[in-house]
Image (cartoon, rainbow, N blue to C red; front, side):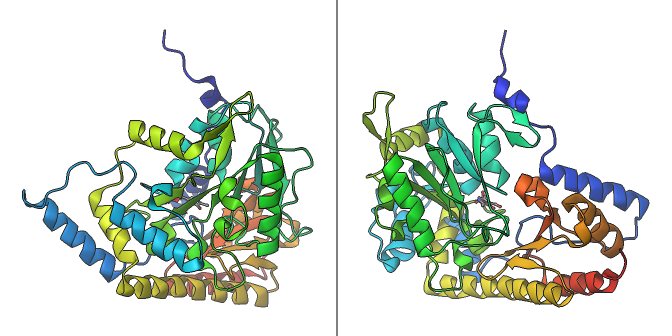
Length: 411
Ligand code: PLP
């Protein structure tokens, strides 16, 4: 008899974005002519950079001829891409990493989930609240979350990020073994200063805590004082894994390519306290279970680092950040309270008139035909907020703002 992993059965049926799609679907059925604008899901809309497209075309042509064909590549990723990553994303910021500390993947989401395979079930895990749901659900699947009570897993430590603490999580009151940090943050669009991030690294060194640092949105940082990588902090390579992605940096949500940095100095521990190299274990795991990202995707990712590629992706990011500025300015003028959006493509908007997140979701959908993401879907501390994204086309963004302004009087 094949037994299922019982932890999978504990997961609630509804994934946030399915619930949103269902509500929008029901509304569309009743109002087939409604022109609905989505500022909800975090997916990009602008085309790939021309330098990336050309590199991918060239890669396909190589695959079309026996003399230049490529089959399986190195599990860890092509050396030329890993060298470009080390050079441009790290050495250029004074961070000394070696290419064998970089593992190319098919996007950050896979490794956000898979990394848990290296870690004991008994680890105490902390997440921020609100949180990118993948960290929570992956730990539920891995048996580290306990059971769900009133929207919280009883064995996870939640670190509330609220207006009162300016969305900066406090260090845990009780020591934790693993903490997931995501900056710039999805969903709140907020960032940590160098001093705030250094406090986390110092905490992790004191407690031998592993920090899983997700910086999928680092390319959106505008303020030069904000750290792009956790490895800008002293001692971070002893305690942190960093995950990055070409998805939001270069429009790769459909292409699929990202990378995880697992430094050689990083240790986790055996139950009797002996250090174990996570770099070696991750290499072992990847070479067993992963056959590398596609050749075409990796060639495309490498082109992001060419001079033209850099200029082109910078322009697309500037386009989205202008959307963010327009949304923030527009909503603030309407009297709404808006956080984020300065160094991230997400805006965290306080729901007006005491409405819950879902009440405001329905209000926006029905009155303005605009879709947002209800903050409560990201965790209990997200209640009373909604998340908007800056990833829509400019005209649609402006149209959405006009519609919201037009219906602000209707309660
Ligand atoms: N991490 C965060 C915080 C995200 O918001 C996302 C996607 O929305 C991802 C990781 C996953 O990105 P991908 O798998 O496309 O690289």
